[in-house]
Structures are given as structure tokens and as C-alpha cells.
Length: 111
Picture 1: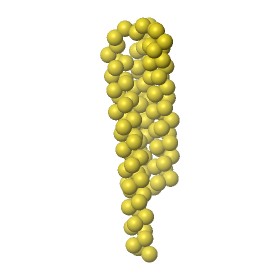
Picture 2: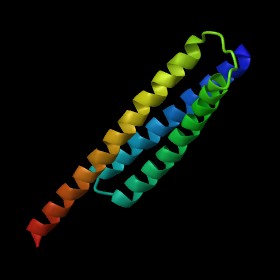
Picture 3: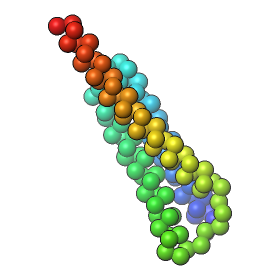
Picture 4: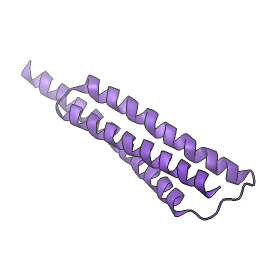
């Protein structure tokens, strides 16, 4: 069971890390006022973080239904990573929105 839990933990960490990379890419695009690509990257980031969350949920549901899991620090780290990156993605979304509003204001003043 510990090997399976380690595999799930690594899947969570990898998908969440890839989501972070896509989120960073989205912010880079937004800083260039390229909002189409920024939103595409954020969409990909959300798909990846959802994959990570589904993996986590399966383990938690197993635990809730009575399955025993040994203490596993890799899984604890994976959960921490997932929640941290989910928070970052929320902030990236807000930052992109602010940059889009700023871009609109700049364009209005140039007219």
C-alpha cells in the first residue's frame, strides 16, 4: 500500500508542479498584454491542478471509507504542494485580471 501511496503522491506533486509552470507562463503572457495566451495557459494549469486534486481525493475517500494508510511524509508533502499551488493559481488569475484592466485603461487614454 505504501508504494501505491508514494505513486499517488508523486502524481500529485508532478501535476501540481506542471500547473504552477503553466500559471507562471500565463502571468508572463499577461505582463506582455497577451491575454489570449494567458487565459489558455491558465486553462491548462486548471486542468493539471484538477488532475492532482482528483488523485488526492481518491486517497482521502479511501481513508474515509475505512482503508488504513501508513503515515507517509511524501503524501503529506504532496498535499501541501497541491494546496500551495492552488493558492498561487488563484492569485495568478487575479493578477491577470488586474493586468487586463490596466491594459484597458492604458488603451482608453491613448484614444
